[in-house]
Image: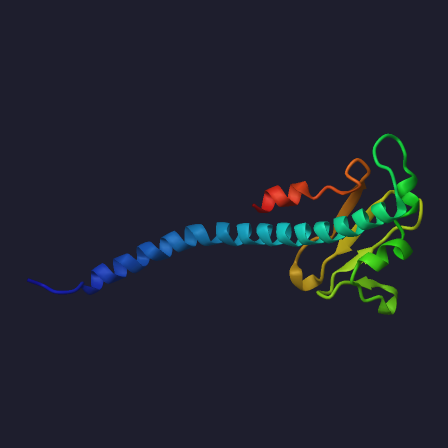
Length: 145
């Protein structure tokens, strides 16, 4: 009776494991990048949604219909008290290095976040939805679950 494995059997097992790894790793890496981007977008969507929601409540703004008066309230002066940002260098920077672009009063109601280059994630525009009195983060919440 022989005990253990022969060299050929061990090498064959390693070759099979290598083939499986070569087939699955690229897909896993791409999926990891997608989930990372969804996670970052979800995080910032929730941060901005909370800030806009607080602003909405404080200013007693009204959503729905064709009322666009909320756009004049989405300004740096109004949103900054609700966000923890570094405002040195005239840029609105989060602790992780992401920067926020806030439109001037009366603009289209969008907020743009540019992520640090090390994150390898494209910048994202978050649009204020009057019917929600904030930003619609649902696409990121369902995508990341």
